[in-house]
Image 1 (cartoon, rainbow, N blue to C red):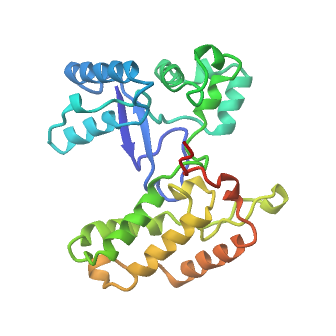
Image 2: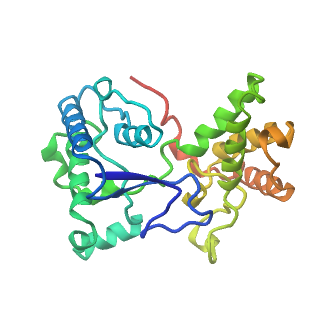
Length: 279
């Protein structure tokens, strides 16, 4: 059964901040009781049956694990199960290399390949083509990891959550949450530029910015950087015993510097309107 690992890394992963905020899935054949495995299989079958009506995830597998670890009950009958998991997979380049060298079957376990097939069957291609329409497309391309900056993630959510709590004047009530959020935002700042002569590769500076999810993504995003910086500035107005220690001044300078540089070049402009519902 798949097991959620939080800030724990894995054989395929490298990190510059000890994997803070990173969530990966690892398959453990001994994980879970027979009853839990039956419950997961039943939820998967239910999701598959309703895949054209309910496409959004309820993260049942993660919720089952967290419920067990924290000793509270979870009613699976009220939820639909997302049938795929973000497994501990290779990088984009490694996936392509494995495909070209016909080594995917050697490197990826049978459970990884099973999740690939399950994802393709239930998601298909943008909900447009039937299964036959997927054949010309190398299915491994659908395994490209979530570092591709087209969907919101942890940093984005945490920054807005902090702003909402502070805007409602609930800092003292949510002191513990704000401390954890404060530490996460600080740990998620990208502290280095890309390696080597990155300008020759048409890469922009990244030092001081924030990505959608965690620092290890490495791709700075202007609005995520702005929201994270705003949250940190709001937190700086409160006592450290409530919200934790402020970030070092020079790191604020780095954040402002990259924001000013992105006024000229904003690489995320190609994703304009991706969150706007047009139907």
